[in-house]
Length: 173
Image 1 (cartoon, rainbow, N blue to C red):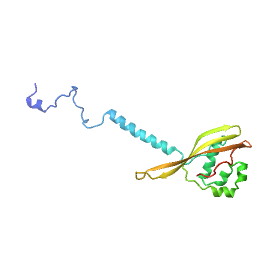
Image 2: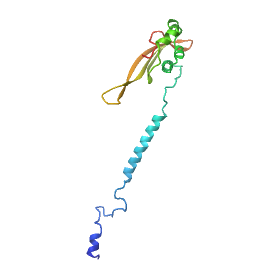
Image 3: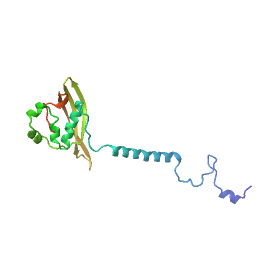
Image 4: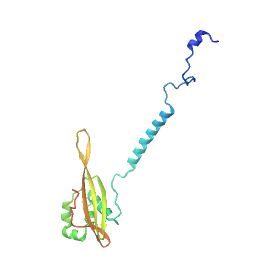
């Protein structure tokens, strides 16, 4: 039997009947540590995905009308009116000489080009394109929003290639 003084100094037994682990008073258990590591890994993956995305839009395949419309607006965004003019049909070029076209279109401030719909009937196609522009303001400081314009562009097949018909606005606005 132990003397009374030693019994008072000994720690009381835990509810589980096991003595406390040495040095684990305020440490993290495995579950909490796993959650923390998983959270850090998730944040790293999100940053990697965001950084891996191309900063500028890339040209699309021009075999489809949607690719022609995308590349037309991409040329305007990149301040390449001569390239954009090449996407117009012969009829559209006859009605709008290059000098007039170049004055009508200005380099855009659009940030995104999105093709929403493409409908092809024989040698005519209709492509709905959405252009998103930065917008600023709002009730909170540093808040922002974007303005979006949707257009339906008509194309005709000329010599096996899709070209923009003369029935629409040519600029970005």
